[in-house]
Image 1 (spheres, rainbow, N blue to C red):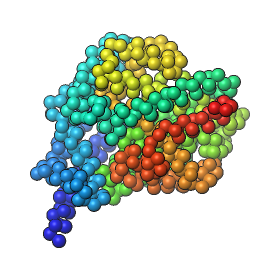
Image 2 (cartoon, protein in one colour; image 1 turned 45 degrees about the vertical axis):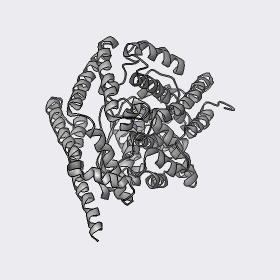
Image 3 (cartoon, rainbow, N blue to C red; image 1 turned 180 degrees about the vertical axis):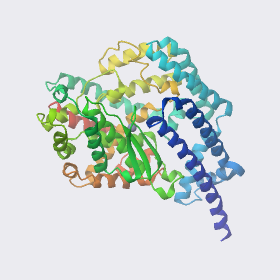
Image 4 (cartoon, rainbow, N blue to C red; image 1 turned 90 degrees about the horizontal axis):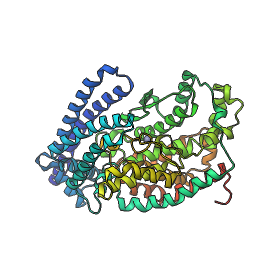
Length: 510
Ligand code: ZN
């Protein structure tokens, strides 16, 4: 009896402290959502100040989690198997995030914040001026800081692993490298075969004006039918579409409408709604603990990509929605058959810019970045050589010539912000998505027919059962294995692309 009580009390105390942190973090998320969606331009400086102070309070509270050794004692007991399931997850995962922050000295954190803030500014100017040389010294400083961070955090094989761990806990460069090499060997010939195909989607056939109010109504309808709960969330507009969750009962997504482009908003709305279903599907009763947190960036991206690509760009999905889209925008869609529309939506074309890439070439953009950042962190590559390396890889993998650094090595914000280890999670999301979707096809009878009938409840329930409700109970690889019966592999993604693009581009016996 006495033992049971002493076992319960530290955990209760920990949960109280975690809840405190969670509510403060929510306040920070509201500030940042407001900044992207509603804030007037002159509010920027004051908002940045408020956000920084709030972040500092959260950081202090995070470090205070282990006051009196509260957290370390619980984590040790979890490691020895002395805590039951949910308690063990809370102790293990809270320790994981605490330990990383505790290993970084205050001076390092301050320097990292200052250099990346200035670095992002220098990057934006360098990109506007197409001037890599102006950014290079800053990038070199950031790389040095990230190498220092890896040393402080610790790693087994590669310093890159310590950075990857922030975004995809448990994943290593040694696991990623063969996964990506297989993918590269498959994708490069597939892109060439598609380019050699006589099938040519004709985007000009859907060119026209798509009034914004009608687009907004259509997008709301699609998100709602997917199961996005408008009583527990909102859909707004912002320059860069994103998802943020204040709580499983209040999840915000944004999209962006372009009057002359019907596809952009639909794709981004479905993508963000996929992220949102994950957030709305977390167990609200466990809010504040890792049991109500998402597993990793890769698993998060798998949810958005599964809905955006495997569902939202499928013929079945448009069997359901296309008649209504045609009715909403009779000019020009009345004259465009569904098959033509779906073909345009899935057009494959090597391009310079990652964020505009189709689902076949997208992962090659990621592999270029992964190989470069791993080289920078391992010390095998030098910053000054990046423009040339970038051009060479883009030519070798995508067959395209990079005319300038603005549309080349300078296009992404990530490195200037210190986000080394982030890029691979986009590609992992695509691989996990295909593997989950294949398991869903086995687990949900007549899936395509259901999608064609607008019945999204079964796929949503499948994802909730296998992914959402578990929070951080399992690491990504274990979660995927439980859901699909197999460790993460690139095979389902390559099978999916072969089937889909083989049919769309009539690639014969590929
Ligand atoms: Zn996403």
